[in-house]
Image 1: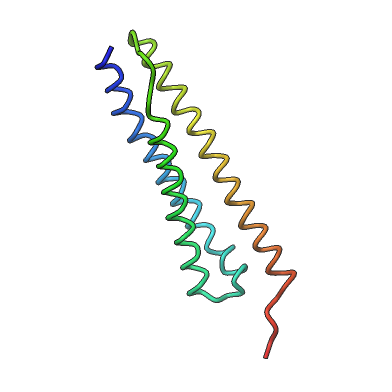
Image 2: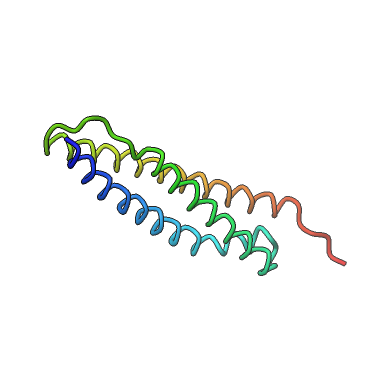
Length: 121
């Protein structure tokens, strides 16, 4: 039924975009300290790099949400709720994996910065 597909789209897109925004805000607000350590206290480059990572996070995750928008034929309300739950659940798992991947990059960068400190002049 065409109307039920539209309902899924109208619920799925705002929910996934909101999930992405909230996750990005929390992740990148709290990652500033990692960036300062990685870039050895150089605030300008640390915060600029953090912002670029944040923009990439938005683009990647919203792009995945848009690419997975398509649904099959929805026959009734139960099918609509089940499809919507599955789509939001899969996106939530994907977003969680992206969060942990970013954390891994931050910890890896922090470890590399400690191994290779800048020479003092």
